[in-house]
Image (cartoon, rainbow, N blue to C red; front, side, top):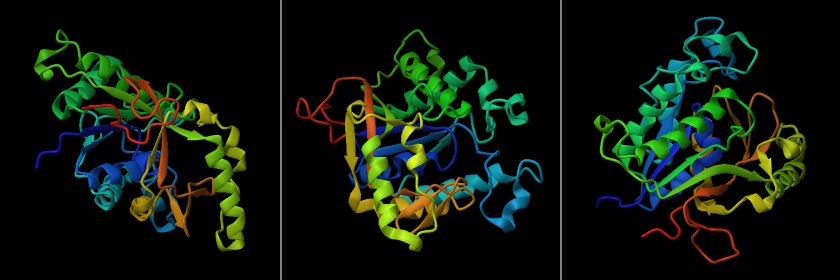
Amino acid sequence: MIATRRLLLVHAHPDDESITTGATMARYVAEGAHVTLLTCTLGEEGEILVPELAQLAADQADQLGGYRIAELRAAMAELGVGDIRFLGGAGRYRDSGMVGTPANERPRAFWNADLDEAVAHAVAVVRDVRPQVVVTYDPDGGYGHPDHIQAHRVAMRAVDAAADPGYRPELGAPWDVAKVYWCRLPRTAVRESDDALAAAGERVPFLPSAAIEHAPFVVDDDEVTTEVDAEGLTGRKSAALRAHATQVTVREGFFALSNDLGQLVRGTEFFQLVRGERGGDPGDRERDLFAGLP
């Protein structure tokens, strides 16, 4: 049976998709939707949590990007996602690092990409996949990482350009995306995560994440329009996170990045609808990214 529901997620680096949308991806695959992941860089500048792989780092062999392709494919196998794409092809755009670092000055850094060119690559994917729903980051990229900001810019402009019949007809027939969402994390979810971490005590060797409650990517609850419940698939999300072993540590239902701040592996994920008509009951959060669509 051909899936009629099609979801496209635009992420900056391998592991971003599993952290913020892993359960959502697993749910829609399980429900028969066609799920496409578009990743913009290979994450070459990531810190490496596996000591025996430290030589892959950007300042040594500079082979982390290739290794992370394998991690990404393993993670997507855990979620059941078979349609994995890289913007412009694998390695076209390099992880930009943070502003002010040498990595951010590299000509191939995604932050320095020709935006028109990058958008054209994304339009080709949108017109090929023809998704009703696109998921990406907010204008600040969640926490200000240049690649997340650029991924937001590319995704949003590509949605507009893909619907324009006069834009690059050689990239395929126009396609009008019905709904666009930004990934969100409500403040109450962070507090719940910290309460659970405190209850776990010394069994889970992570630091409390209370420091991130006021981080840019954490928002007031009223900014969340949509929550996707995939609690029954939390195990798949955990497995996907474990596949990103150079970047993520998973312990007893919690995960942490190199900052060692523990967060719950959540089966419920949160979004803000920014384009399209809201579905579901008025005044309540949507429970389905495709709510209100035919």
